[in-house]
Length: 470
Ligand SMILES: *Cc1c(COP(=O)(O)O)cnc(C)c1O
Image 1 (tube, rainbow, N blue to C red):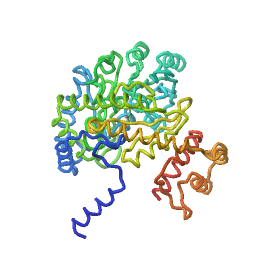
Image 2 (image 1 turned 45 degrees about the vertical axis):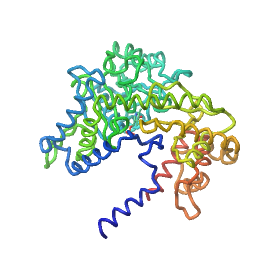
Image 3 (image 1 turned 90 degrees about the horizontal axis):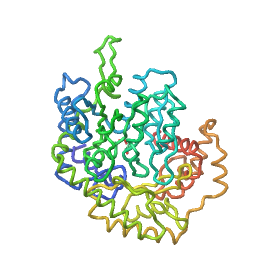
Image 4 (image 1 turned 180 degrees about the vertical axis):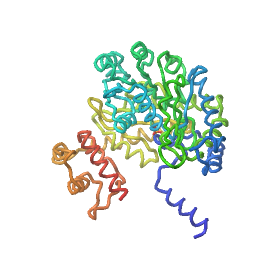
């Protein structure tokens, strides 16, 4: 096959993906709208795609770029001259490492982290991977911000077992900034690490106005995660994990000389790792610089405010919590459901992300607003308003009571393959021949998953993923 044909096939494969550019995909991807920066990022990615970050002495260029990125971040997050950082492959890896490092540094029996209910699920994954118990405490039911009193109670209850507290800046689901200073007043005297998850806000909040301090300016914040592949608008595969001083990072590193090959020496989960993403991030960060990011952040923040104002004037919709950053959780009343609404938005060319109900919180629609979306907020609001009318016209989706009972009766722990397959059929995720595929309209599936207990929802989706990749 010729390279042209192969590239044509790659183009063809992309046809069913969500668009990464154009500002109409309001989750998963982040678009600056600056084509030159995208081109630069792609070129740098390709230039360094074959380099290996395994050994910084073999590829000093990558070490240099990592140090430069950390240097760029230092004033952004009010890091002192002792602040250090590591480039990781993404927010999840930054969080995995932060939790593992806290666990290893504390070296206690039955380690615990204390987090608000709204903390990103990457912390759940870290606990699952590293044998750490997660104590999730309720957030304030009105502001959706972490509740310092609830965190304080957990700190008392679990005492020396607590190796870390983590809060969000902002939370993914509601887009609000947790009260970092108030939480730090609890963790600092207790000698407990406090991680601020700024994965999504890290490249926006430094340029937002009127927020209370939330970064290293707050005494007691010991580490921060901030993704570049979100609002730094760099190609995927780059996040920063920053620590107040090298002592907090020490336990992150891993070395093994106990085999006949090279001494393995790693700062991150990955060992061999492409230098492409870090080079791309280095290039894009130099391109925009502080002034560029200030402008992009202000554009995205202004767009978010415009979305909030627009939603307030659309019947049946409300903003769940006043956004502190560029994320909006949209709530609906009884006349429609969010799953139908998101399908209808997709029909109109906009991807918005349904968020399922959780405890007492009803299901919502999530949007992450990029700088590239800001100029088309009026079109977005028109599509939203049209979709709401259409969703109201068909009425809220009804889940068959039989299915609801079947889902509620499942014990995910004792399910076998055959039962899973039957369930996938029920959920509409499998066809008669056993093939699985996401249906073009997701509302019926989402509505069923939404009423399933979370453990059943998890089991069904895991079975689905397993079948997808068989
Ligand atoms: C995106 C995100 C993460 C996880 O990051 P990935 O890059 O998807 O691994 C963690 N926390 C928050 C708040 C996020 O928005």
